[in-house]
Image (tube, rainbow, N blue to C red):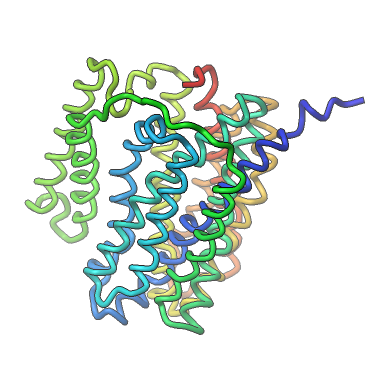
Length: 392
């Protein structure tokens, strides 16, 4: 007779995961919904795509700059308090974004959303894995990844429906029920945790790391154009960002309690997993920006059809979730990840030659397979990053 306790995720872990996922869905849906709306926002707000892309880039910029604070804030305030604070910030940013009057105001309010999201996303994973106590990490990470997998399925579809039937402002109002439900559930069901004394905030590290991330992202965002990198508004922020990040690396290697302890990257599993996740981000987030624009500008479809065309990628990722988790627990992460990358590479090839006349069936099938490969990469890599680490 099989011992189900060894093959099933603990009910307590599932309860914690369920509560956190409700709130996290607001962040995930928001990202994917907005990606479908860039064309509409450009038209309605009378701004070029080069400006409107900052609705997404500004959000990701704030998210990236805030993530380094999450570990310190977790130790200082405790998981439950920090989660509710981050969710409240995201709620405020969502309401403000719905009231934006032009492109700059919308970009500014999206930055507020990014601050909340930057605290929530790493905290989601940390709290669930901590509740699991290191057991059945492959299956546990498959649970953690559920919001990220549902987003590419439901987000573009919801975005297309909203933009077809309502004003673009409703893209942000749909976050409100998730945020409120997430706050209520977290208050009632998440285990209480007293805030720790935590370490003192590494202000010097923060002043190097966050501006460094911002500089690199701003520089890369300005690359578009015939001159490429060889322009001051590309080179200045990019070089400054790289210098600041390098300075932080030297500083953090010597400091006892840096903002981000990069010495953990000496741990082979964590270091390799971090590098692979960084590279896989190009395949995932680059496509999230380009594919909706491809369907709308090259293929000439409306926002709803563009959303429907992106659903197969999310479906493929969802299909691979359970299998990838089981294979990771069974045969290890290496071969699952390698296989996933091969699938993503091969299924991306049709888009390198796609134009207005390419068969819809070919592109949709490629997206389905591509999504399967992305799930096969993300879940094992997230799992292996925790192997052998002490709880703190």
